[in-house]
Image 1 (tube, rainbow, N blue to C red):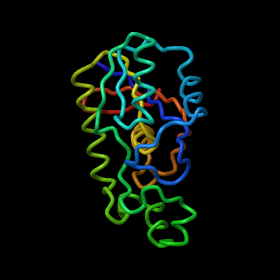
Image 2: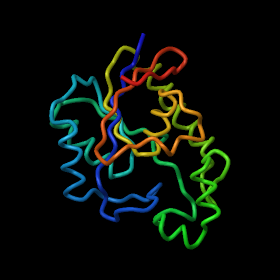
Image 3: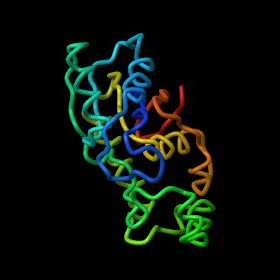
Image 4: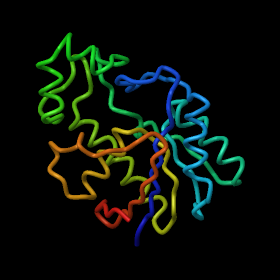
Amino acid sequence: MTLRLDLLRHGETERGGGLRGSLDDALTPLGWQQMREAVASPFGWDRIVSSPLQRCARFAGELSSQLSLPMSLEPDLQELHFGDWEGVGTAQLMEADPEGLGLFWDNPYSFTPPNGEPVLAFSERVRGAVLRLHQAHDGERILLISHGGVMRLLLAQARGLPREQLLQVVVGHGGLFGLDVNAGCALTEV
C-alpha cells in the first residue's frame, strides 16, 4: 500500500531570514496568508501531522479545527538544529565563518555547524518519523506541515539526487509538494 504525504512548509516567520532551526518563531500575517493560500482547496486529507514548533503547529491546529480532521504533533519532523548558527543569517556567516559555511553548502553531510545536529542524524530522525507514519497510516492521505530542511531532505531523496545536493532543492515559504511513501519507505514525488 501507499501513504500519500502532502508536504507544506510553514510561511514567513517574524524573525525573518537566517537559519531558524529549532528557534520557535511565530508566523507573520504574510506567513499565515502563504499557508492559507497553499491549502485553499483541501485535498481530501485523512489527518494532519505537524512539527511542534509554533510556525507549523499553530496553523495545523487552525486547519484541523476548520476541516474537522485529527491532528498530531511529531517532534522528529522539526527542522535541523543549527547549533551556534541558529538565528544567524548567511551574510553574517559569510563574514564570521566563511570556510564552515562553504563546507556546509558544498556537502551538508560532511560538515556540521558548531554544536549543531549532524545532517546524517537529522536524516535518520526524519526518515524514522516517515516510516512510523507509513506503518500507522498506510493507505491514507496526510497533510504534513513542517520545515524547509525536512522537505528538502525528503524531496531530494524522492528525486534521487545525490545526498550532497540536498541544499539545492528549492522549497519556498508556503510551498506544497506531494510524495507517495511505499513499502520500505521508498519515496516518489507526485
